[in-house]
Image (tube, rainbow, N blue to C red; front, side):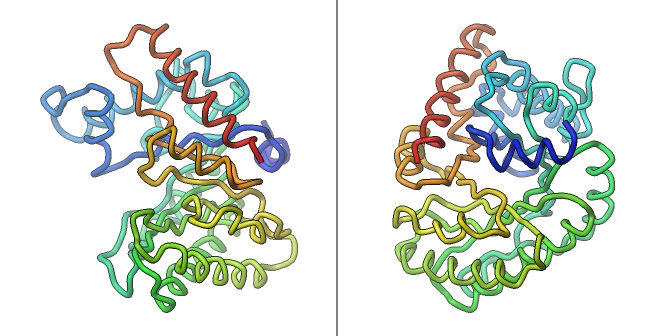
Length: 296
């Protein structure tokens, strides 16, 4: 797929984006959920080899190429790897799936009710490598813990600043200021977040687009103005710790917002399953997430 074809697929495709980008500290937990215990690997190389094997199994499963998955977000080492002897980005494109790369380097400690992203000291090199690998876009995550206006303004400003650098490098940025779904003041804070996002969108140069990855809002259809904004290619939702069923039920109430789930997609997959069992479990999750994504 060429860039315009990938743009059209993300903008208009019926389906959702799979999040296959667990990295660093989240990888052991993801492996345990898959049925790979800590004793089965030693050191980062073996750990990342184990998670790559899981992701390759997902990508090559028949249900993953059903047309209902329109994009996939990868970790750098997944991008660097091979799937059935083919570079991962190309393996996805062969299945009609648009590849994205996670670019953030983790989170700062909480301040003003938010966790900003750490300085991305490796960003320029990673963008160059990602573009050469045929990636379409990027994703970067920061977290909002409470309805602190100054903190929310800072987190959105940081997302847009890095987004500009990513767009200048020829890639599509997904801005992800996640709102903690367990925050007691989430409804108030998400209203502040929307206002800051709209300011950022309005300030973008004419013709420049970004994507947004947001927690499913406490108030249904809150993000409709962002979804309709001409500088937004697509708005996707993270599962935020919800189970597949709960995430899908909440998402289905939000017209125009599609899923970009990780836990909600992978939670029922196990290493010990036969290929048929694995594909059936993955297919069930894909079908449920697809239905929720196209419900609006």
